[in-house]
Image (cartoon, rainbow, N blue to C red):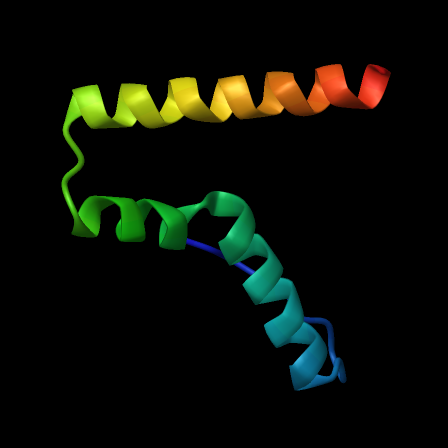
Length: 64
């Protein structure tokens, strides 16, 4: 449960901004989206490998 302390006389927009920031940091929305569609372990591993290869190529190209 997310608790956002609001000071006396604090603007409601500022409190909402604090809440949204805390909510994003917890990763709840990201996890819900991930759970919505099941991804097989082999597919997830393949995507992870492809991403690692892509990042490695970017780093090599930037060094040249």
